[in-house]
Image (cartoon, rainbow, N blue to C red; front, side, top):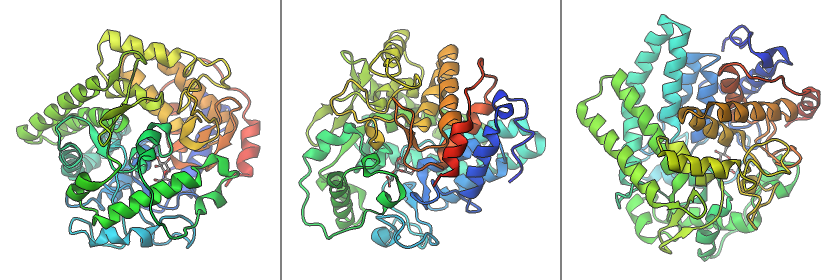
Length: 478
Ligand code: 2M8
């Protein structure tokens, strides 16, 4: 990988303590050559949506390496088009992550699975990939003609795979044609223990499970930062059922007890389909592809419209088994903002909620950044994973969406606050919203990646606060 220095040397953050160099260092240390570990110890494998965000950051350091990150992930795509949520690292230390490759080896027996090893899971994560590919293309444009030419080849190679991935989501994951993506497991949402899923999970009757290890707890400072044992029992029970169904989508759809329309994944898919249309243009894809993609975008927008809750001013997930919306205020409610191109009224409603005390306007926040679950919810927990902490990667999605919506000042404010948080507290996976304490993994790859992208995205209006504390924290880092 080429050095980050030079590329960013004009940025105010670079001058104030080498944030770029520190982000670069995290990505280098988590780099496995052709892919990047999500975190050094807690997550020693390749995760699907992590890789997309990582590629967005890497594009500012090395366009080829960014492209390789996604090519490696898509080399493990299933015949159905599914991109697995984890590609397991055969070199990961034993007893580092559970459930690991041996637990998911069943997926390899599916006729649709790619040859193993490496093994993959048979779940998915939100489809950020086409957005990442488009940003790699944009970065190549800034890097010059040679980079553009090799990246054009990359686009030609990855386009059919992206298309198959989106077609999989539009068909296997939406047999109803609702425009919304169905998930079979909270891990499929990327927001694992969010209260979004409490209602649907509560209805799942967990049967006999053999004892299992919680390796995750050895890699964080307190068990309160991770899902509870009750959550894990449910996760592993759902995995057992999915394995019992032979990872077969149709069987899962018929019998699985957890079947939910995920508005965040659905909105990301709409935005990713916008990006796929741009890519289709570059590679001169057949008109038929473009018609299909346009249809998926329209259907996605309609689906999200139907999940709009006017009282809350947010979108709600939908429990297919119970036949009812899952009514809780989380970050996923901003799905229409992420999907983009909303009416003026809808955008105003969303921004009003985003700025309100229910989210980024809460008076107790260390930085004005939206907590993953609204502090006004009874289920809010400021330390527990997706139940309250702020997540840089979510802030990146919101920032990117605000830019697309033309909300420039809000976008700048969000970017500045996010960078202040990271400059002050380090490259945490997530942060306690009131104290700012970094939680989870303290050297999280996607946090480093979005930092690079933010810094590369133009000047900030105000200087950052002191970074000294964050360096001492990172020195202690995991
Ligand atoms: C978290 O999820 C994994 C399971 O997939 C875990 O907790 O073990 C989530 O935050 C997920 O969104 C993320 O992709 C993954 C790796 O960073 O960690």
